[in-house]
Length: 145
Image 1 (cartoon, one colour):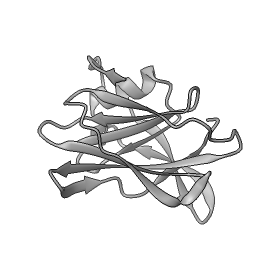
Image 2 (cartoon, rainbow, N blue to C red; image 1 turned 90 degrees about the horizontal axis):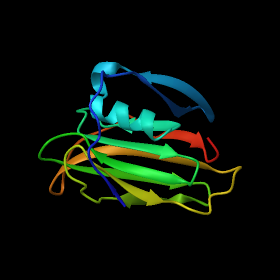
Image 3 (cartoon, one colour; image 1 turned 60 degrees about the vertical axis):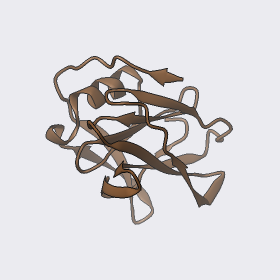
C-alpha cells in the first residue's frame, strides 16, 4: 500500500535504537538530519525505530503493531532503499527497494516475527545503482516495540 500526502510539520528529533556491543542503546538523530516529512510520518505512524540516510534522502521506520516496515522517499530525484535483518533469519540481509516517489512511503508487512524477536533496519539513498548515502549504522528494536 502506498502512503502519500505526508504533512510537513516542524522537524523533530527522533529517538532511534542502535546496537552497541550487543545491547541496545538509544541515540537521537539531530533534527536537522530528519526531513520534516519523515519526522511527521514517523510520529503519525507510531514508529518505534527510524533510520535516516546521512543525506536525508531516504527514511525507514518500524511500526510494531501490524509488523510494518515503511520505506520512504524524503529526497527529490533519488531512490530510497531499506536494508533489514530480522530475528527469524538473522544472517539474511533483505532489501526493500520500491520507489514511492518524493514525500511518500511504501508499506511492507513483515508478518510472523515473534514478539520476542527483533528487527534491524538501515536506510540508504541511491541514484540508479549508485549508493549516495546510508545511515551510519543499523538500528535495532524489539519486534513488539
